[in-house]
Structures are given as structure tokens and as C-alpha cells.
Length: 273
Image (cartoon, rainbow, N blue to C red):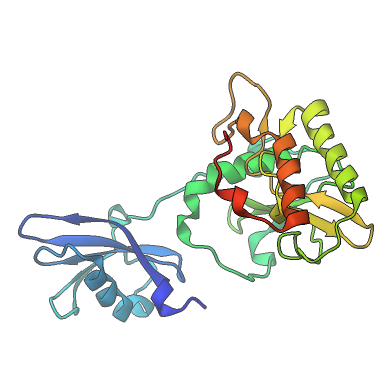
């Protein structure tokens, strides 16, 4: 459950000279956006949030906008979908893409919710889509966390996300007290060479937080391909960007430096320097 101080957020509003004023309030817990209209010029969203918070649990899902009085009482409810300020993302059907052999699917309602993200994650949908397409096409490798399943919605079977295999123990940033083994460095260099030289893929975000040790095999594994891109390709798909200054050789060097010295000051230095 999200606490009340973090539950509501307003990204935008429409303030007319002399009024009325409308603020679009995001309820992160219910994952919905409702417009709150008030008479007069209200240049601070906090009043709209205060009024909305009083009624949010009683508003039916088909209410997209409310008009409230100066004291916060609801004057009108608007249920026409043209008043819906919620941003939408196109999620393609599974049948619309080519899925590599061996990739299975899972329905979203079959998963257990452990933590909830805010609804503004739609802004990063193109990055998740690019990451899924790249990661699920990588051949199985002992030093790459395995892509697991494509997540489908419950109604139409549209792709809304993906899962990876679970490796217990936390990443190397969380477990920085581990004794670093030269064998792990050798494994990291080999898998980076494989990605760069054989698959022409630059991970671009090699760091302790994106490395995990599988204690069952005593091997290091790399994950999180949201910054990954194909090397020197002239036209890259939306959300994919190859940046030479983020090359993986730098990533390996600075990762090893941080793990050995526990000095994180270089993180504030731009990649190009």
C-alpha cells in the first residue's frame, strides 16, 4: 500500500484567467488519472490533490473528471471517456511479433505483485519494448541472466512486459563485501567480448548494480539490457541509441575499480570524460 504522502501527483493542469482551474491528478495506488476542476484561479495543485484525496476511494472507475466547490464537495461527475486524461500505450498482440523458439508466456494475473510502480512508467515503454526484443533473442549463456517469459494482459493477450530468471543473492552493489574473484573478472571479460564482437551488441551500462553472482555455479551474470544497442548501425529502432563513450571496455574497468576500492566518486564524471 502506498502511503498518502506519496499517493497523489499532478503532472499538468489548465488554469484559465479568472478561472476555472483544472488539475490532472494521478492516483498511484489505483493507477488512474482524474481531472479536478475548481472555480477561480488555483495555481497550486495541492488544493486539487487535497479535494481529490477525500473522494478517490468512492469514485467509480468510469469517473474521469470531477467539479468541486470551494470546500471540496463534488458538484458534478463526468463519465464521458472524452474527459479521460490518462495517457495510453499501444501494447501489441503476441501474434504481431516474431517470438524466438523456447520463449513461453504468462498472464499478468498469474504473477504475484511485490512492488508497484507509478503509472508514469508509460514514458519508458519504448525502452522496455526494445530491451525485451533484444534480450529474448540472445542465445542462452552461463554469464547472462536468462530471459524467462513474455507477460500478457488478461483480456486480449497483449504484451505488457517480460520476466527474467531469478538469481538469489542480490547484485554486487548491494553485496559489496563479497571477495572479488579473478575468475569472475575473466567471465565478465569473456561475455562482454561475446556481446561486442560476435553479436555486435554494446551493453552500455556495465556496473556493480547490473552484475549478480550465481552461488550455485560460482559464476557472474550480467543483466539489465535497457541501455543496450547494436554497434554502429546506421538506423536504430526507437529507444535504441549507441553511445561510443558508454562502451563496455570502460564499463568493465570502472566496475572493477569500484568493487576493489569502494570508491564511487567517478560516477559523477560524464561518460565522455
